[in-house]
Amino acid sequence: MSDRVHRDAVMAELETRLPGAVFKSYSAATKDRYAVVFVALSDKPRTRFSGGQWRHVYTVTVHSVGTDEDTCLWVRERVDLLTGKTLEVAGRKLFPVEFVTSRPPDLDDDGPKPLWFAITQFDIISDPA
Image (cartoon, rainbow, N blue to C red; front, side, top):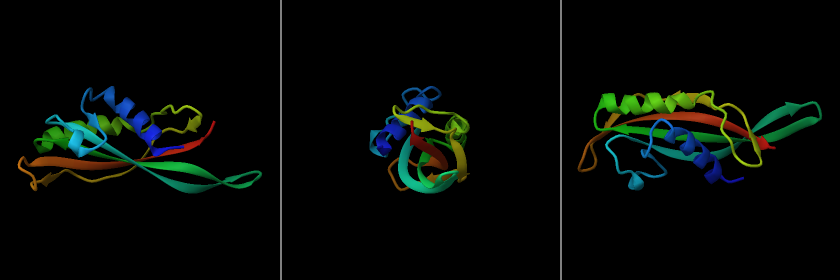
């Protein structure tokens, strides 16, 4: 199963709270406040009665961005609402999104327009349906 379909499920959920402001890359971002979503696959062992099995765990990293610290936190507050949501991906059984960690806002002043960003990570456990 691809990282893309899980990323797209996360983006669709975030779009409900941040319409038109959820992107897959910084280069695609066009707003003053937005979220950028990255997804990476890892594996996690689990125990079953029939023996050990592996399940897919997708780690979702979201950068919440704003023109000032308060705007950045406003975006992150909406991103954090992913916690506990059960997303849908065809052919997979997804468990509720688990919060992993976050970083406080920081200023990125490398570019021509300084922006604040905060990073949040979640895990999505995904098994075959």
